[in-house]
Amino acid sequence: MKSLADLPAAAAMLAEEAKQEPFILFDGPMGAGKTTLIKELCRQLGVEGNVSSPTFALVNEYETTAGKVIYHFDFYRIKDEQEALGIGALEYFDSGELCLVEWPSLIPNLLPEHYLLVSLQPDTAGASRIMTIKKV
Image (cartoon, rainbow, N blue to C red; front, side, top):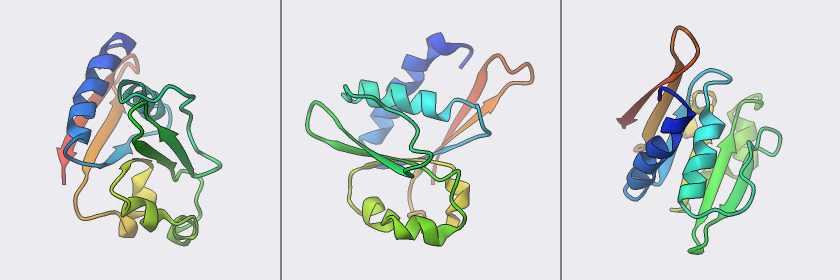
């Protein structure tokens, strides 16, 4: 993504992928744009309410205009995987609903077998983002 103007197209591509893969991981350093991309993705999927990083709550639940549920996780502040288990992460993951996970590297043993991995990296100048998508 060369600029924020590219964000809707990137989110539209992910929205299409989300139809096939209900588990999407977002990886990248702090400030790479993970939450910004998730906000646009949720908007395109029909979430009309506020979409924000669940940094302290660990999980936010959004409902689309079509009545679908989206779970948004941010594991940046967890101490260990037990904390994620304590909020019922596996139950959310097994729900069949769309799960969007920031900082998945902090819960490697809890991840499902199949998922879509979205990596965001600032370019060397920091002005744009390099987005790669991999199906696992």
